[in-house]
Image 1 (spheres, rainbow, N blue to C red):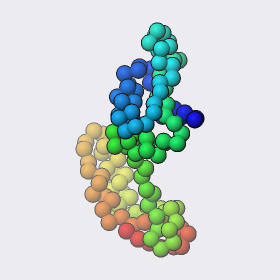
Image 2: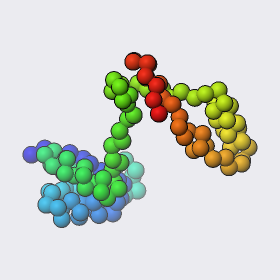
Image 3: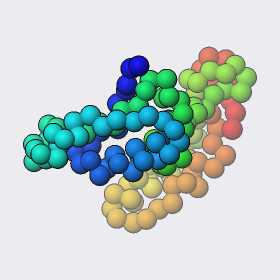
Length: 133
């Protein structure tokens, strides 16, 4: 059975909580370099590695997403007509000026809300020429 490293840390305490959660779900876990880091913890090149069987990776990923240890996959925006992911933002001249001014004012230290600029923003697909919101 092949084991795969899913998390590394200089301190054993960083990986013990996740190891406990995985073992409570019935997943076999092991710590690589556990004793080395306890004895020589001042050498930064030694890392404790939490390893799980390769066959359990999908279940481990789901548990890590639940715990906040792993970012959930984000979906890319796609053209509704052709499905292409090569979409571009289409800003009018007025919105571009507002965006540049808001960046400028932010650099000066004022707090300008930029989120209102992107409401009802149009997108453009260069593959099929479709414009959409």
